[in-house]
Length: 197
Image 1 (cartoon, rainbow, N blue to C red):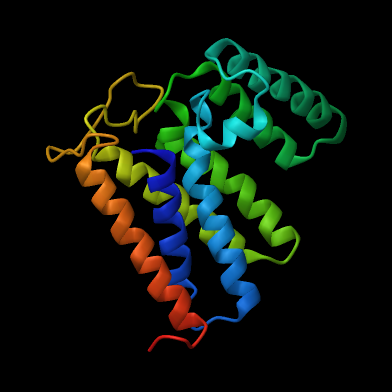
Image 2 (image 1 turned 90 degrees about the vertical axis):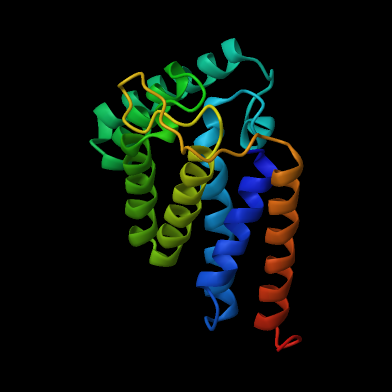
């Protein structure tokens, strides 16, 4: 799936689970779900988030960037024994060395990323950010499971798993899914603003 479809899925899910919540909670859920829906693709140099993070959009620079983050966070972890920094160093290391739809598209990648967000969210009193992030991330994995390539769900095992029913990335069916998700988001947004009943 393309980044825009993943993001549309995350936004629609954030709006759906935040129905009836305060505007602040809705905003946190939608933003965290949208971010969660994009994080798994940090293992691809041209992913939406990497467009903002990377100076050069190639595999070599992506690997160098994430391994540099690993060194920095591991150094800080050794000096501070901060659990978050330790988890970040693990996450950035495996993100840096894995291929697309590898570590970040696996159960262990999901658990590592959501653990980081959970610790931060609970520390600062925003548990709904953890919920939104987890939903967005999980939906990304589910969506990519339905692609031809599939995902390395059981990383470090080098075996891609995918659904017997597949959707080709960036084809007409994905365009329809994107359109439907966008319409769903508009209806949910208007409903939350009491404009549409």
